[in-house]
Image 1 (tube, rainbow, N blue to C red):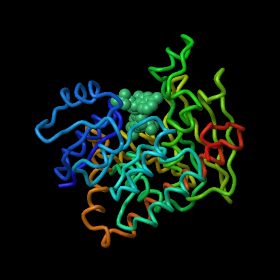
Image 2: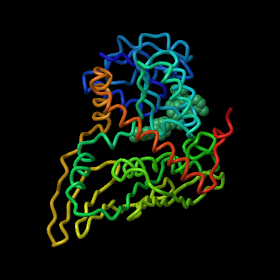
Image 3: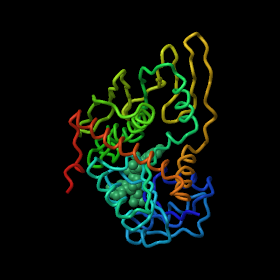
Length: 335
Ligand SMILES: NC(=O)c1ccc[n+]([C@@H]2O[C@H](COP(=O)([O-])OP(=O)(O)OC[C@H]3O[C@@H](n4cnc5c(N)ncnc54)[C@H](OP(=O)(O)O)[C@@H]3O)[C@@H](O)[C@H]2O)c1
């Protein structure tokens, strides 16, 4: 059993805990919150056995507790320092996307990992671990040529109402390294880099909010023979599917993050559903993939290295896109 602690008491942490338990590989031992009351309230509503779970209100108490791993789902700008503390304590860490605010932070985490060679760091990008994402990859290999893609993930945020009412929710402020690109934009970008590799050049055209964060935007990734366009945002809804272009063949994806339906069109009027039904909890596959590596780090080293490399490419490309649009984060000025 992988004994784990969690940082963050929002719904995504609950979803990860349920996914972890569905794999039968993990046991929750510590819930960290800034307040004892919130930690206890969070534990009370969990559907897993409460017997072994303790609370922590300081990082040192969390790290001194009975854990092998910490799952971090705090606001983006806190990921780096929290992940570094976990690595330095010699524990594995799963960090919600995006792992870090910029390449300086990412490279510092790499240095910490080099000093703790038994520690593993995973980025929780749930969709690329899904069976239907793997189907897309396999099907792309059968295409006679590739001509890029349009990948879309745009959902009106429940927190946009608060922004309109004059507030500054964590997820829509640069203070927390947030905004459309560093939130929902991570999903189509992850998919693009995993499916097409590193682009030659990138350009981001954001729709900015009054506080300088991006509410929505369009990113263009330039490859030698084609472009990949990413449409994402938190200030409007989109019902467009995503598409990957072959010659006359097209792979059509209902939603590049949720991946409920993937259809192959042969260009001669025939279409075939190539997806399988998705699980109720979309985090099960990443939780299982991470557990497989933790249980057999040497046997799974190449798999781990591939995920880590992808995470680094995503971190660099997020930064390059942000630079192209002149969006700065306070985290960029941190010593
Ligand atoms: N994979 C997915 O599908 C998915 C979905 C949603 C979010 N996420 C990721 O999960 C992370 C958390 O997102 P979220 O929307 O849940 O964030 P959030 O609600 O703003 O914050 C998450 C938790 O962090 C703590 N927190 C909030 N504000 C804080 C502050 N100012 N200082 C210190 N701690 C603070 C709170 O826990 P306490 O009050 O208990 O300390 C809160 O429950 C983000 O990185 C996001 O990208 C991933």
